[in-house]
Image 1 (cartoon, rainbow, N blue to C red):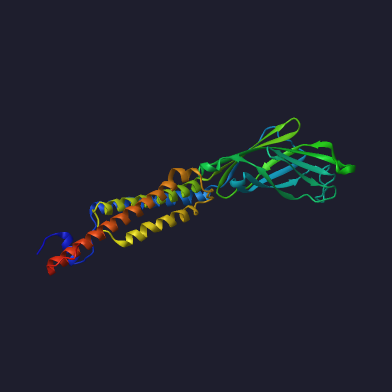
Image 2: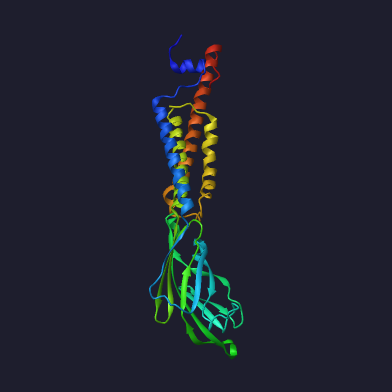
Length: 321
């Protein structure tokens, strides 16, 4: 009877005992998974907030504009804000919450100006505007965006021909609240003698979003690398070819692009993660398929030649030409 443990395992299958090295590897893997889970969950519940830096020169009277970011569209380089207007000045807002005069609030940025008008007697309320932001989406998930905007307000008169003529400038007090989920927002406001409010806004992806994307990208690369290593082992006859390996490695070619679509806020194809990682993960998957196919053809041919040789030896007759 052979004492080879491999032969013994084949003839008498039984649960394989885990070695000390195996337990160490399992423990290390579990620790990494727990650490990543805690980081993602902990930061997800605390991030996505905003910071606000006000100026000492903020006006004490005039009109108040509260800006709340509600959406960010990096593809179009746009940010959407909800602006709520109010005032505690009777010359601006009547006790019933309606405008005492024709009021115009103008938000100016690098992509143009937008106006919010409240006609005399109309109720104060809120409106949504889209403003331009600048940033580089190709740097995902480490992309960030900034924008600088000027906010002014005035009383205006509606003249003939549809012209709105400024009659008196109104001081504007800008505040902020809220944030966009998955983004950290920084607000800073400065006031000029004009008087204008100069708003600087910065958006950066939350740490949990970055970590989520990094984990998925790393897993995609590791799986493709495993397929490549297995294909080399099979191609060099260090492992026996199994046709299931071909199906598994071939499925990666279709699974990896689907996995990329799971990235939070995934950018269009051509971002930095594609150039540095995803492209090469797909290339490794293709190479793995080619090597496994070549190994399968070679090993199957060897088996056929061996079977043909055995047939010739048993019959003593050869049909070779």
